[in-house]
Length: 301
Length: 288
Image (cartoon, rainbow over the protein chains, first blue to last red):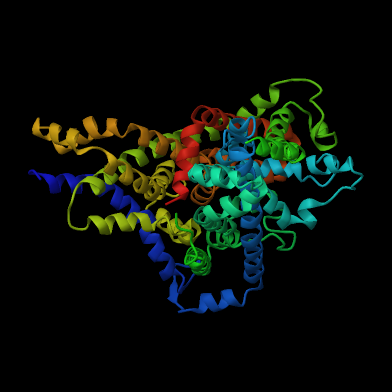
């Protein structure tokens, strides 16, 4: 190319690379380094302690409790969200039956698509505060008041079913995103496949399980990884919605909240960094395993 | 085809049931938001003792004024607007510059730098939270909007660069070559020719960044600590979280719901206007 290419390239890359290195790359490497130190905010002293923080972490009951909560969310959140989203996406794309051999969506499908997706643009914190009233433990709570109709007595949602309540909000917020994702995937499935199935007299239920789901396998896998990563977070909801930010008695505690409390509030930098490394390793192993798994039997079309 | 139609008809009940499911889910989405807006007009007693499905006894907008002034929502709102304005603008400018160079110029280290940026997508923000806090503190930027803006930009770059690089690669070469023959400089080519051509992509990613940064919570709550002076810098999400969890404010729940309405209504408006771009942008991001 012409003269002055390198000054231009460097000029354009300098600021983004510097910012990214200082605030993202450096802290990633810093996390590994700080996690091997005994460093508290009270003293400027930092001692190298090797893997002490990690053995402390493994002996910490609170960490194991939080890990158990992540495993619970890791299983329930993707399963429920994906099942609901697939069902809704199918209805929106082809619930309206066949018209001239072409499957159409139900009446008003555009409206549903817009509404279902809406929670995705709202801040999780704000959604959490709103759900504080949904889960209120007496008759002023939306959910309890609704259940009164069926003669159900007041349920102490956050005290007795805190983690399920968190799961409910996560599903509420996530479903719409995956409806749109799966709907896009479904509309890219060649129409001839459906036409052939319809001509063979297959019902919509058969088509859903035998044609649509196998064809969407790769998209579902991506959804699984995304929802799994979401299950490793839940920070904002636990912060604003649960009793005592992770309570009662640790019943809703999650690792990100422990990282925040140890690192930012208590200045236990070494231990908090070790927790961060553990969470990242956990997340990356999960993502790699999910993306690898089942790759062999991918459908080709 | 006639037999198929009959078969469809036998699914009439199923059809109705599935429509009911859609309506129920739509109500589940909309009702909490309507409740929030209505609760802003209710009294504390109506919110805490009353039937949550009841309408407010009278419509009085004073809770909005109290939220804006006394609960400092006005200040938090303004802070959020300022931070997001600068950070989104910065993200788009720096992200587009880097993506353009990475997409359309060959040089040593191109692939390496691109990979470094994309690697940022793989790490959860909680991994870096503690060291990030220490870096920001050492730079003397803790508790400043300037520091937070830089951090927002840095954390938005991987996604932005990932997307825009792909976008700049699709732009035709012919126009760029013609401009170069006319003697345009590299910089001029970028700002006058390539940026306008990339407008659809830039719009989508801009909206995405506005939503993401506006809704951000963990970064402000970590990097803008409290304290009498510190609280004045707070953003909307952290301000609302603090109000809702602090017992001292329990006296004025209508104002809290007014604050929530103030926070969500702009998002609903932006979403309704741009819902097509938002949906395609966000879901395209998932299939990377």
